[in-house]
Length: 155
Ligand SMILES: [Zn+2]
Image (cartoon, rainbow, N blue to C red):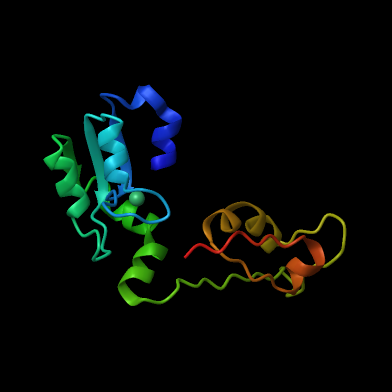
């Protein structure tokens, strides 16, 4: 959010900000999102869901309201919970959110190394999953067909 507000510059003044998760009110990798919203002079913040993290837990909403910003909470809440499911899982259980993804061709064989490969995993791994997950452990198909990408580990 801090970066989005930086990009918006003066355009954020008087605007409505839509966020899937309650803005934080503490210092993490970036300064508090609440302070960035206040400093940017947004008029309204529409929040998808309250942050289940005990160090946030509605404190971000209170800070925005105290600063005179109009705050609406729970818009498309179920959708936002799905969007933030890995984060929620980690906060609630203390464990990482892990997904096992695999695919097989119609005859149970990957067409490794062949031209015009119809590998489903290749299509999915290059688009959706690598943008979502913090860390990627490639399978044998990835190692043979693709250059594995290791996004930076975010803690
Ligand atoms: Zn934040």
